[in-house]
Each structure stands twice: as structure tokens, then as C-alpha cells.
Length: 88
Image 1 (cartoon, rainbow, N blue to C red):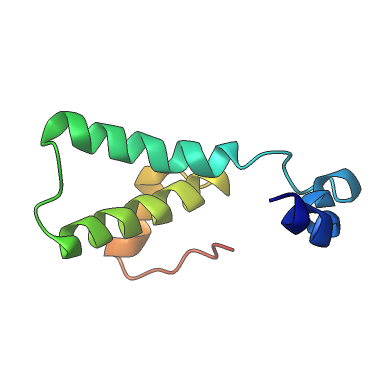
Image 2 (cartoon, helix red, strand yellow):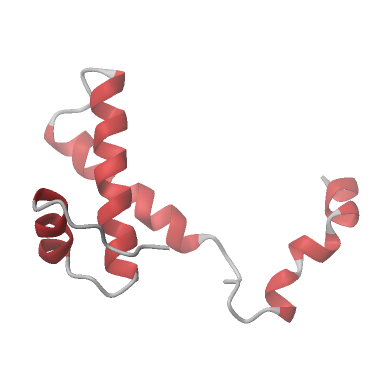
């Protein structure tokens, strides 16, 4: 691990030069944790791989929309009315 950190020092310390890069990946971890824990409490697991993939796709879309200032209801309306939100 030390060798990898030394070889990739520039990437590892990018947050020090670019204030747009967060210090941790905590936001990504929180985005994954909530749906996973909710699903575990409700049914314990996904019944199919396709169901898990679909759930993750929807949660990812809604989480990205929220982070970019769109309300979840607005994002869902856009999807069902065929509109495309400019998510980056």
C-alpha cells in the first residue's frame, strides 16, 4: 500500500490543490449506505440481480439530481414525462 501511495502521491493529495475534490469519499459511501440499509430492513435482500441493478440505477439518478439542486419529485416527473435533466 505504501508503494502505491508513493507512486500515486499526486492523485492521493489532489484535494490539497483542487478545492473541488473532497478530502474523503464519505458522500459516495453515504449515497450507497442509505439504500442498502433500507433494503436490508424491509426485505433483507434483493430477489434478483436485475432488481438490484434497477434499484441502484434509480437511486443513483435521484441522488445525482438532488446533489445538483433538483428535487426528487421534479426528477421523477422529468423521467416519466420524457424530459432529460442536464445531470453531470
